[in-house]
Image 1 (cartoon, one colour):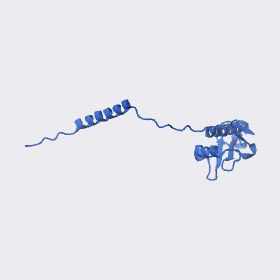
Image 2: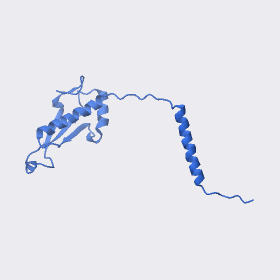
Image 3: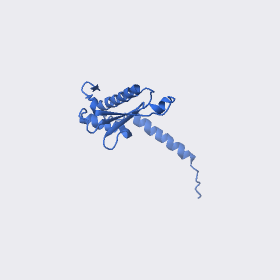
Image 4: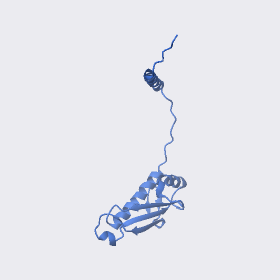
Length: 141
């Protein structure tokens, strides 16, 4: 079990890990050993996540989530397979924790009288500056 918050824990059987060859430094070892990790987590069918967290996670994941609701995290930052594996799990946990936070509702506030006056004064000032740039047309009598 991977503990996310006090109330949310994910069973490790819900996570699928594929090890692939990573690009970057590592010498000849990079051509032989599959050190990069591609972690897959089926958000849409997960029994561990409450509905509200699932919906927020799908929005937060952005392009990392497929049309079928599978979250894919690539981890290839380190040269060791185990460190990449842990990095992918840490990133998944962080993403789910962020989705578990309920967003605060915005309370609508009123503009202060002083801020309204400042805005109108700025508009008047700008209007005056533009008006003085216009060409002057002389009226012929």
